Image 1 (cartoon, helix red, strand yellow):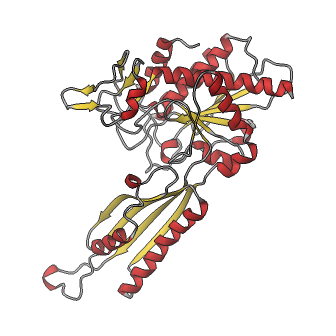
Image 2 (spheres, rainbow, N blue to C red):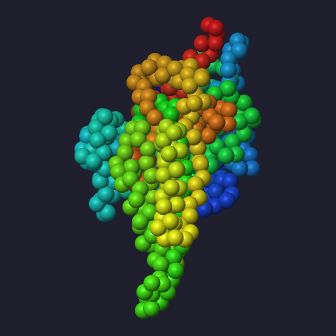
Image 3 (cartoon, helix red, strand yellow):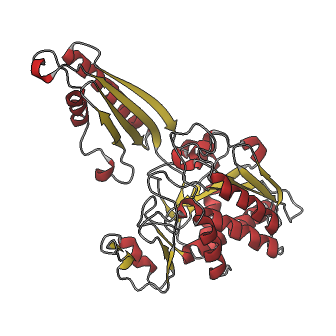
Length: 415
């Protein structure tokens, strides 16, 4: 359906623009450089021939592909984000093309001895014979989620160029700041005007997800007492030792490196401390709402217990919910998942339906009234130098979008 080189060229043009977001910023977008890609996308959407192309004061880009059928079809949408994670550099991305991958080690950077190996990343082996796009070992790639943008743009252009394919009205949106959890915060669901949508933000080919973590952030502050160490007996209270007690009291095996599937976790993401004060930052994740609430309670009870041991308020915690499991919003409209599943099957992609061990814009959008399952974008090893994406996976994702548009139109013609 789609020209391989055309997809590569489009993808390269996006990933070479640095769009890293910044959690410490209070603006939207959180970094000025995100405007560079946002404005480029606006011009491309116009060139393709989409209508109602807009960009608002917060860099949310929206556009419309008008219906080409006479009967009524629900408006559907496709969403991707253009920021990249603050976890790893997105500056001077220099992607490499591996043609006809042979299943062996890929040297990303000879000088730095950085190798992408199937001995460690076993998923590589399922792409033998395909064309891979990798990093050069010094930055991330940005397939999360510039692969999704590439696929949406490619599919929209294909539908414009092939008007014989029936479809209803389609809305698309490209968002900033998803990687710092704000992608849906200023998303105008009413303006978007879709009955449901799909984020093109999953990983390997075939992924179809409508469950995600319930998520919260916890900030633990420990107060100590700094006294000259030569005269500290029975006076000094070292906040770092109390913080260590807190860390060691949480279940050691309920952390990201020891969990999988539907298992939740506590994840210590930052420690900053001295004798006088230590601050711990955690994220809390669980698919089940009851377990999620129980995890928050465990941390609160632990704070109370430590305070009672020291007989003073030496430790405090602030917990903030971030997003919730979209399953409860999608299950009442499961036909939207079934349509995506059928679309994959019709373009010879085997659906892999599983819960997301993370979150997407779709989770928050679902709770804002826009049910929004997540479809694969094709990349692997996001947020680091080992990131890669098979070109054939991006081609298939674009085909899924086109087929979804067609199936939705035909479903409502029949009804």
